[in-house]
Image (spheres, one colour):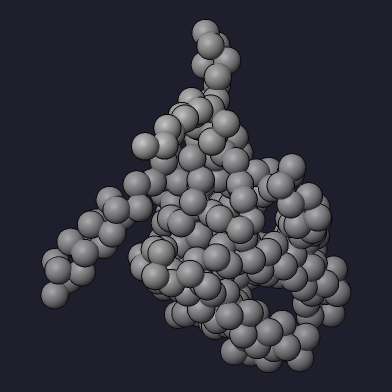
Length: 255
């Protein structure tokens, strides 16, 4: 059964024809999921520890998790750069959201506990800003692939991935709310939702970059995500795409 699933997964990935940018983004995403899962299984679940506990108790975890978060934001910004001239408003909304995400991550990593041993307000609100920023920019990413959700018959595999992305985003949103509520109410079991939300949002990024490329030099159309790379040769300076005006005029003589 596992062999069959693996074969189907490989065939699906081959059909997607991922470029080097997508491969790099997905490799980093897969490493991040494995990383979160290993530490969850080794420290989080056995000792009921929050991600925050691991961040402030295990230096390598803090460093590597920060690298993963920053790389994730960089790949997302590379993608939204494609929107700069096509959909400027969405570009700036996502840019602000990514900045909020990074700022929240930096803030939550500056201070964890207050003098009385409770979670500090700095950490709580930093975590809140981080999660709002991430969910906000990813919701915008979902909007960018809305045509896959609407035109099911055009690309079945693409549509399936798009709906998977939507489901993962909703699950992350629900888990994030449960975690934030538990965090502010000092509930002891909130750590489960925190680790889970981290993993589902990373899986959502992997699925997204299987569908769209973070190559910042690709053109983008908000109505049609099926793009082609535009390359202008130095010798001719011509665009390889052929427009109707480029075709020779043909006259038809009547009989």
